[in-house]
Picture 1 (spheres, rainbow, N blue to C red):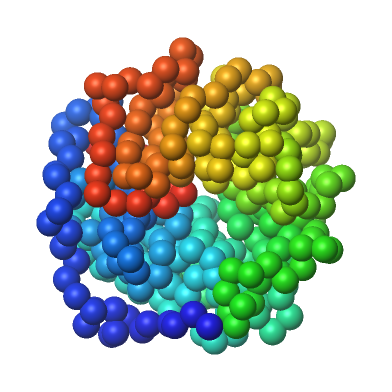
Picture 2 (picture 1 turned 60 degrees about the horizontal axis):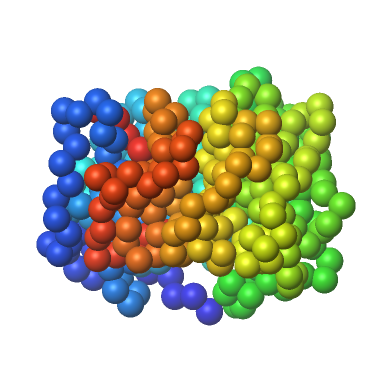
Length: 358
């Protein structure tokens, strides 16, 4: 069973400084974003913050998604990787902790949250019955205000829709604290995309794939109507990596070359998208894979154990991290790595990264 550390225990555990990393220069360059991510700096040494900064936030568990707060520049939220028991608000420039939340014994998080419609929403688990929850929280204190069902099991990433509802990728996989990350229902998974309406407090629409072994995990906005969905296959052999979701058309799987699909075993760690490009990190296939905005396959870039990925503000580059500590810039049109911008840090990056612009 995972050990849960309280805020007091965490503060007693050690300093927030990681002197081993070189300072990344980004201030004053409008085209050079600050790259913010969770990482490991050694065995059971979990951190989150600005790549290359001397001050990082220390975490008792691996961090996963980081949500920048546009209303408070320099601040963001980090969510513990599933099954996660902490949420933190901190200053990503300095690593200073600003707020902390420990989950109660009958709840855990799935590593994701968003600031939307004036609230903080997180995907959580009701441990007593295994049902997924969308929790509305105070954005500053992180305390829960109310809970509502996501309509499925194992909710993962979530995104706000323009009408005030929340799009939730229900992974369909049951996990419990006593079994850690062991998947308890691989034989009868129920992955689905749900639209949850906070005004009604429930799911108002669900979308599924025929192959129930394709767990739906991560989301990226392509355009006003379409979202890319990263898949993680709970079977053996070749499988698709990404689907496109549309409220009118449902879920559509994107083509992946057979050799790549087999090598990747259907595991897309993260996904990023814009109007003309979709990309995912295929960790097991040691590749970053690309499609155009309509879902036609474009190619792949070899990268050992790719992890997080984000599209630059001008949509000219996909910025990608990997488990070896590298951060590379890939031209979104030529699909070539720009060696001038590539960097390497003495860390193991997690599967998400966020970009902040000055």
